Length: 357
Ligand SMILES: [Zn+2]
Image 1 (tube, rainbow, N blue to C red):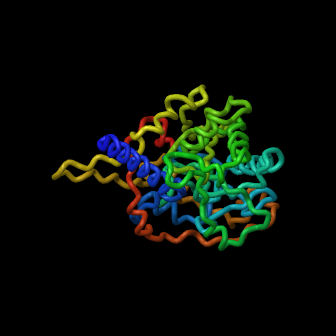
Image 2 (image 1 turned 60 degrees about the horizontal axis):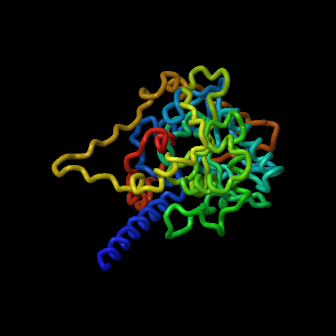
Image 3 (image 1 turned 120 degrees about the vertical axis):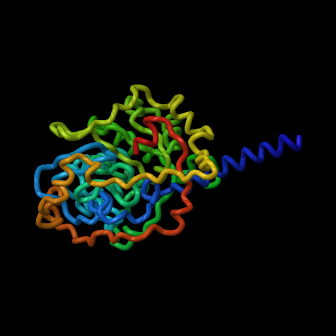
């Protein structure tokens, strides 16, 4: 009996640890801060560019390895959206991504009881890898949207920097949705986003995916587009397909045809995805991943980096006739906070799961 109790407690501790791990990734890809990149690395170079290049909109490469030409900015404010964390200068994207976000914001406000979107990171002005936060978002076809509704008033620049994320997860529980926070309007928002044919996949926390599998009573045709992944419990991530004519854009394998509510989801509720990485064998040094250089990206990316800038943020803002967007200083390269060092490394993962992001 005592042994059994001890085992149960051990299991509880493991689950609790997994819960903590889940919570430590609360800000999703936004919290996975990294060290300052080396001068000359792709992260340093793409992160230092304040404006997009002139030229036609074009993604080059893959979501997690590429760059983009001719980006446009999502206006800072619209009737049904507000952009967040302006100092990051990451509201740039392919026009197909920007127009999709505007469309989603309108439709969600009109049909889903969701007053408007708070839009997080899209891409840097010329895409490319970012020094913190994301593996993908490199070609202007990925965007993060908060699971917090837009307030009725336009937020101040300060509030947009500091508004905390709200997790949908129950504190202290393993991959469990907090019923006090979750709403059906959020479910409708996710399915609205998944409903557009150009949307390729949407990343959400496994607990959110499970909630959708268990409770969504509408058309389930697009449920399979919701892909479970680490983090993503306070925001979701929309990825659109390579736009028509984007010959240098590398598409991702399509999502499986099923609703994704079976085995692949069940895996997330095992210990495996949350197991800490195995310690290196004594006497061996773990291999340090090499930094990505511009030469590792598609050839076009060095030209994109070197090309002349557009005249101003305003001229490159989507629907430039809209109200002029305020100039925003590019993000300073700041060292990661000490606490980021404590982020546990992610354990082994099968294909088509976290590597997606
Ligand atoms: Zn994202």
